[in-house]
Every structure is written in C-alpha cells, then in structure tokens.
Image (cartoon, rainbow, N blue to C red; front, side, top):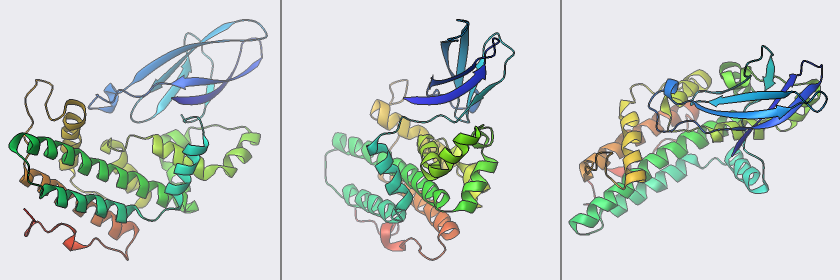
Length: 288
C-alpha cells in the first residue's frame, strides 16, 4: 500500500495535514495516458467540520493530488510505502551493494544450464515459459538495482534526479521537513525508485539518459519482451485469446543475447572498468 502526505488550508483558516492512500497505476495499460488510477477520500476539518474531498491520481509517470470542487492549492509529497525494518534493510542492501552485475550473470548462467535439461515436449514449453519470465525479471532487477545504487551514492546524481524528475521537483516541504528529509535522503530516493515499475521502460529509459547519460538506443525488443513476460507470468504462456505464445530455444537465446548486450552497454557507461564475460552465454556454441 502506498501513501502520500498532503497539506492544505481550509476556508476557515485551519491548516490541515493528512496522509492519504495512493492507488497503484493501471499496469495493464500500454500508454501512460491510459494508466491513471483514481482514489477519492474525504477529510474533515476539526475546526469548522467542513468535509473536503481529495482525489489522488496515479499513473506510470507520476502521482497527482487535488481538492475536488475547490479552488484551493494543495501541497503533497511523493508516494511512499510505509516503512518497516525489513523494507529499510532491503533498501540499505541495494544502496550499499555493488553486486548487480554478478547477480545478473549468475541468473543468466542458470538459464544456460536449465536449457540443457532433457524434458518432454509439454514440460519443455513450461520450462521455456518460466525461463523467459526469469530473464526479463533479471533485466528488470538489474536496471532497478543499478540505478538505485548509482544515484543514492552520488550527491551529484541525486541532485540531477531531483532536478529532472517531476515527482521530486514538484515536492514541497516546510523548513522542519527539509532537515528531516535530508537525514533520510538516501532512503527517500531509494524508496521512490524501488516503487517504480521498472519494466515500464518508457519511464526508465529517459531516466537513465537524463541522470546517468546512458542512452539505450533501440530497445523495441525489450518492450516486446515485457509484454510476452506478462503472458508468461499471468497466463502461463497463453495470450488473452487463449492461444499458446510462440517460444523456442532460439527465441530465448536471442533474448539473452540482447539482455547481455544491454547490461554490457550500461556497465561500460556507469562502470567503465568491469565488463561482461563474453563466455557467460556463448550463442555460437550453446550447451544443447
């Protein structure tokens, strides 16, 4: 569940500060303009008992909040998940870890090994379905953890994110909140980035370019892979019409090759020294 802190002035002069629920975007939407989800909530002024109706709209791009039927400005922060010790421990690990590439390589090597397993035709399709979803998840995890780790460990990149991302640039704080947020800046930034849907490539691609100066180039294949992954994860390899999606070893090898090339491009931009081991997945000499 995501929340958002808001504040506004009632017509009686009372300053109202509340926390409201933020709905998840419509993940089934293909475009940002169709991804909006709305939540309405009533907030009562304790001084004059006036009921104020709040509308929170969340899309792939950003969350917005306004008072319905009132011409009153409202201040709001970015959406966040309620903190817990587990959440912070996970975020701190992502911030401090530099193993993103190693994890990706191990995940890809496991695909190579599993493709060599001898199973019957029906089980083989199920295996390909699971492995396809695994590869796309590995790409998403790499994109997410690499971006978070780089941003949160650089004041220059953190500032660049804040200045280029509308969610951060539109945030408003009191002087007291500025000091509180500064102390937790890494966790605040990491929480926001972790909450993003990193397979929403239309959002992530420009973020990599604007903040890390990393241009992905043509990644139409990744948009398609995310859509196929949706069929794999939610319908076990069948599309909305109930037809079995096309999967093969060659299709999976091609996806792995493109994924490895993308991570190599990113590594050469953000980590110029380490490079991907070309032997990790030898498409010219596969083990099957």
